[in-house]
Length: 167
Image (cartoon, rainbow, N blue to C red; front, side):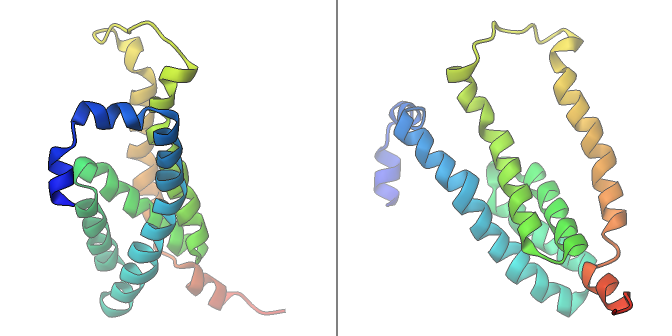
């Protein structure tokens, strides 16, 4: 495997990735299979095991660090994404929400690859502030949403359900 990876021409690999079969493979792997497998492993197994042993905050940090190491090309966004996925798991009590959010994130991240087929936009001037409006809005949203969601995740859905009176 290592020999075949070294001998692969990067330009040829990129051209194949942007071909219809390459894009189809990317959609299946990164939008469906990847999020399901990663959520089962990182949040379903690791987080829950570490939460029982050390509590939810150490488990959140360890799980997020492992998830970030598993995504070396974008460690910071993977770490923050993992924090959000753990918070979703705690708030909902199910992996379904984490899996769906992970799928949505992967869709949004890979969507620009499809832009070359669907939208053709003239090059933007990078020095103009209006060029960065969407990116800055996303940054502000994340800067507010992640700490707020961490505060909301202090209460586990399982604890909340246990406190509810049964009818």
